[in-house]
Image 1: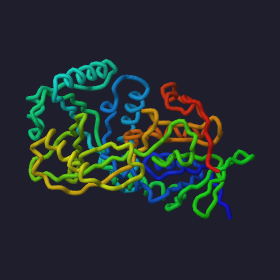
Image 2 (image 1 turned 90 degrees about the vertical axis):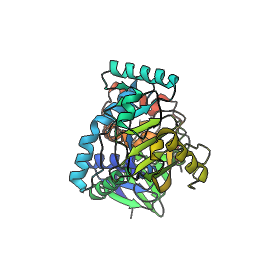
Image 3 (image 1 turned 60 degrees about the vertical axis):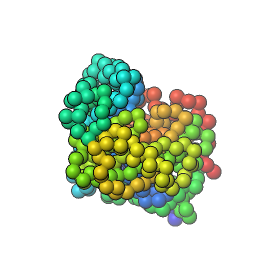
Length: 374
């Protein structure tokens, strides 16, 4: 017997789970289909940085979207904790963007100026101030301090969201979607494994696998393999997240520091952890914070991030298939953008107009020649 739902969400990562939970809170009957286990892919592998000011090179809609989502985070994790009992460990520790050259100093000062003009908090610290606060850091030319950027512990965030969707939605794990078929009634039939489901709306939030479901989608979503590792300092640790173009070091409440991340656009869906990547990441630790070189090695892992032909995510209804919505291409900003993306999806499914800065992420920004799999 075919089951019917108001909305089928395809993808159990942080974007799909947050969207499904918010849609269920509107009173809709929501089904979440996940090809593996909820939270098993890039979401739980992420370093968890909420770098709204870090991840942008210029003011504009993307910067505005990042700030908006960051502003939602405290209430988001508080609500998750109350609903699920799982603490995502949001840490308001700020980020130091370290400068090791004079060119980096100039670039960071320009970034600071336009961000301050826009109302954000940012401060350039001298080398002496940096090493006073973070004595493990290498000799440097100072750092741009972003006090409002923060981080969460991604495995606990995805665990909380997994509990939330299993309480509020129907969830089927191990269900790889093979077809999305629009019907003359305006509904969709979604096939997964040996089951079929009917829904009035479908949300494709399948991360690095989204393009398989929408082969003609203009975003050209593809996996970007990132390798990370965790170290445990013996004595000295970090107060702040450290970032340089070469790597980032993110301290966690459990005493470890997450180091990331490589970026490989040619690896496809390969999941191997490589010695070259580990050596590269450990070299970055030595270069950025040599005082951590006596830390013990904890573990290494990979994540397949959803890259795109466009640096910005694709969110909204596809004009060629009314009722079919997408949330894809978040690349390394899925954790940061999950709360605002969920709000965008709810408004998209409900047909409510968006604020102007959200329009920059709608699929209509590219010519749509979408073809759902049949």
